[in-house]
Amino acid sequence: GVPINGHIFAVTGIGSVGIGTTVPRAHLDIEGTLRTKIVREVVETLSIASNVVTIDLSKAQNFLLSATDNVNSFTITNPPSEVSSFTIRITQDGTGGRVIDIDDFKTSGGSSIPVFWPGGGVLPIITTTANRSDIYSFRSFDGGSNWYGVVVGQNFTN
Image (cartoon, rainbow, N blue to C red; front, side):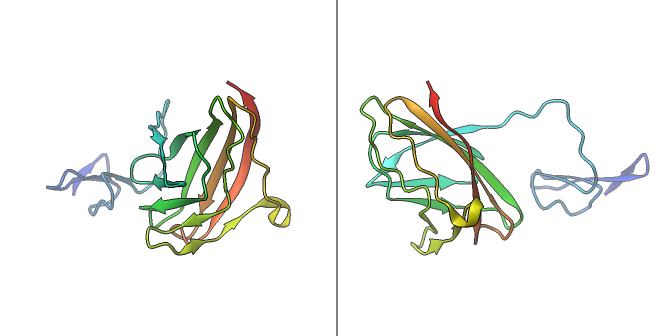
């Protein structure tokens, strides 16, 4: 590491940058307070395959899903080992009436992942009206072994 103004700054041969650490654990690893003016996040479009939606957390933390079919489960892949979160907007297509099991998360191996909801586990009722959207956010504190879900909002007009 190279000291800059009394702080350690390191660039590894694999393209990782560490600020306050000589051993970056990610492409950018900051040991200390981060201050930014604007943060832009990637939005990934999801698809339904055989009534399953795969959410790859190595691609984004914000997802859009057009409900063109029923969804029986969500497969969560590549959760970080630390705290992680993601948000999904689910929009019924022009037909509407699609059943979305927002409480059925699985690993890529097919094992169930618990999803906890506020109010002692009260499951949200998914909006089924055509061309309407619901937004849900999920957070894990244990590397994706358990997820806590909240309803951000429902029945948005598109």
